[in-house]
Image (tube, rainbow, N blue to C red; front, side):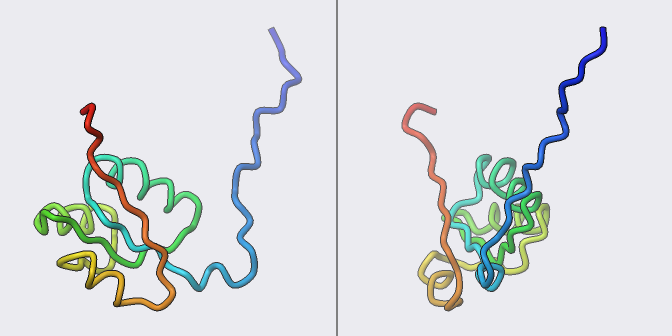
Length: 96
């Protein structure tokens, strides 16, 4: 059975001019950040600039796995480090 349906989707997000100057700082280093947010940001071409977690060893591990350039020891340090950084965070759901 042949189909004429075009499944080649144009899903690449076109960034507004100047948005590529911003970086993403991540607060949290659990499963959602490691296996969902970071791969999606990489696929979209977003620039991740740093990560922090209540568990510094986990932040180090995720940064090494996903090529995050800087690990901060707490969110205060992450937030004051960059003037052009957007913060994204993830926390454990109470239902997990």
